[in-house]
Image 1: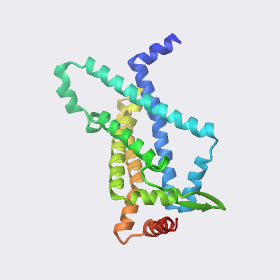
Image 2: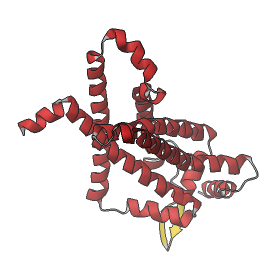
Image 3: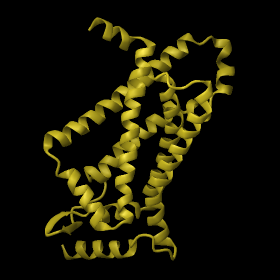
Length: 249
């Protein structure tokens, strides 16, 4: 037990914890993106996926949510402690040299992290807690069962251009975070050497671009369908149905 506490208190232990929590969050982001992309299959696919998640047993559903929250807190905590340690150990006359050598993503990791936390809170309030906009009237007949119409909810949410732009900006920060974080994760776990360094950096960048394009394809499709002649998603139909339901209510 004492050796475990000593490991966590050491710089190496903090790096391991940051890498492991980072891996959990990377997998969550990837699965979340794949789930969201079902919007392009149709309302039945996305609403089935969302309903299955909401129908999980309460211990499993809330246990996974609390685990993710704990993971985020530990990740931010370790990142903060390591930043403080690095600053204390860095000679003042080498500060300029380090800043020049560091990438833009690595230099902005802390601030992009803070913005991402704010984005996650807003995202949860908007689509999970649903207090930013009222989606209570949006329901869907899923094989005879009345469920929340997540398909219409997502389209209605991204119909607001300022929310879509904030979403795209935040996802851009997330992917900058990923491009540096995934590469650093390999290093922290001792899986990166000079031979593999360039390849792993490229893998991290490619992964970040895949995540970026996957996530932003949804708000971009909503905006393109609304303001251009493209019909990537039935935005006008969904908004009209939502307006009719609201007026009827």
